[in-house]
Amino acid sequence: MPWSTDEIPDLSGKTALVTGANGGLGLETARALAAHGAKVLIAARNQEKASAAVADIRAGLPDADLEVIPLDLGSLDSVREASAAVLAANETIDLLINNAGLMAMPESRTADGFEMQLGVNHFGHWVLTAELMPAVLRSASARIVTVTSTAHHMGRAIDPSNPNLEGNYGPWKAYGQSKLANFHFGLGLENRLRSAGAPAQSLIAHPGLSDTDLQARTTRENEGDFWGKFFHAMSSHGGMEPARGALSQLRAATDPEARGGEFYGPAWVNSGPPIRKPIIRRLGMEKAIATLWEVSERETGTDLVISPAGTGAASA
Image (cartoon, rainbow, N blue to C red; front, side):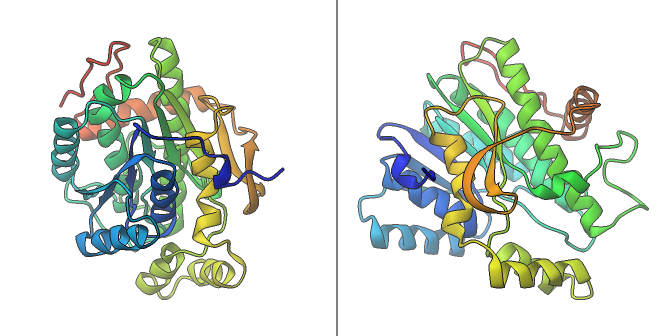
């Protein structure tokens, strides 16, 4: 039987943080988690949209336990400020959904000088996860879900000598690289959690082709891009509604049968109910993950420390 939000267990007493929860997949993820009793931290850059998201959720769930966390993944200072605020107010983080992302944007840089897509999609989430790890590990059964894309198949592993693609930039090349980084990050994090004997689990998910503002924004900001227009047209006419597109990450986050290191996505590549997907491209994966860890620590100045006791902290 197809999995739906009806399968989500009672989440009362649990705290979830969802990045990019002010719209699209993140909004629907926050709504579903709140509907099942979780306290949901809506982490978003645009505060006007975040407030609108809270109002949207509470229109149907008046008693939803929601809190807005200002977070700009394109600024590591903002990530660290947001993380400090979360840690000060929450003993545990039971669900961390690394959802926010950019797709196929014109070349630009984050506040820290990173290529924008790699900086937001991966480096920002790297630091956020590292900073929140003490609270994650204080949970008896936390899950970290990192959202990737089928575009990871067209991505190349990070070149440590040129992670920001200087002089070699392409909007889709950069997107593929960032989504493969998400893929490798989720799997690599699970390996390290297991090695440390930690109770948390790391999983990955992809939403398939969903009709959100992601494709529309790509078209608006990259007008001459054929593929952006193509995918925008496909998502507009045949893409899943955001609530359906969010099911893969929701299943990874909440299905009691799901396990760390698993990958969830739509049954028919880019559409359909969420199922566990095979993990392919294993050749060279271990080396690519090790390189990703090295580059991420070097570029962000943040080590991702895992302590089974939950006392570990990121170092910068």
